[in-house]
Amino acid sequence: MTTAIDIEGLCMRYDATEVLHDVTLRVGAGETVALLGPNGAGKTTTIEILEGFRERGAGRVEVLGVDPTRGDDAWRARVGIVLQSWRDHAKWRVHELLGHLAGYYPRPWPVDRLLAAVGLTEQAGQKIRTLSGGQRRRLDVAIGVVGRPDVLFLDEPTAGFDPVARHEFHDLVAGLGTTVLLTTHDLAEAERLADRIVILDRGRVVADGTPPDLSKRIVGADEVRWRVADQRFTRSTADSTGFVRELFAAHGSAVEELEVYRASLEQTYLALVQRAEVPR
Image 1: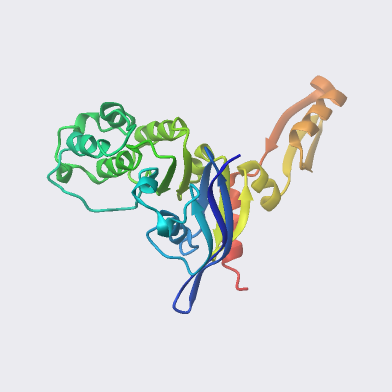
Image 2: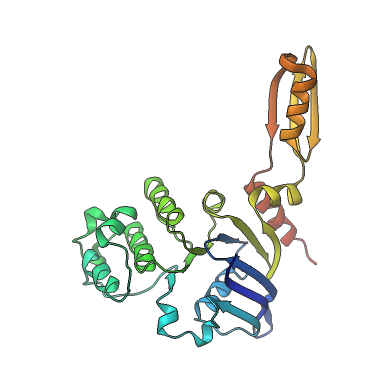
């Protein structure tokens, strides 16, 4: 797999405060990775360094084979960014602004299709200053993807979205076929969109893997409960699927009230946050 984002030994410090310590991360082309962690873990700083908005203290960083601090206009045209907030010309109309921005890219999204994807079709003719907070956030997302970027950075992309708009946006991201690195506090969003989850704790990568792998590694084994005749049983196992298969092979239809409890991404994340609160 071609590497789209390559970070090795990334460090960052603000005065006496160490924000990032020896962060190493690789994201393959076409892969979606969610960066999770409690407030102050270093997520936004990492994203800003990758976008070229902030210089790192130490380490090697490449996005699409280029050091972001040396990225030229051609490189920036291949990178999409959705910030937590930004300012623009409030007098622009929504469709007008997106059409104007699309003209700077060789293969932009059709504006009408993009507006539908982010739920702003009815607001196409409105001035930006008249949009609600949630509508404004949808426009932020549309601006970030209008050029069909090869790498897309999403910092809390669906804050302010209603459930329908969030679902439509998830479908849009899943269909982009581009490399995505996102930060979010919405664990369901991370689980749905991401091929991998990377969790930061106090500026260090403490977990990296798929949601099921992380759950097994951090929270522990699955729990299987069942009843045979008048006896109830509980078993912890790392392979609940295989265990249930063997259970039915041994007891068949005598197995009743079968329940399988798998650790969720939420449980995994909370376990890590609790560890972060323990002084080192």
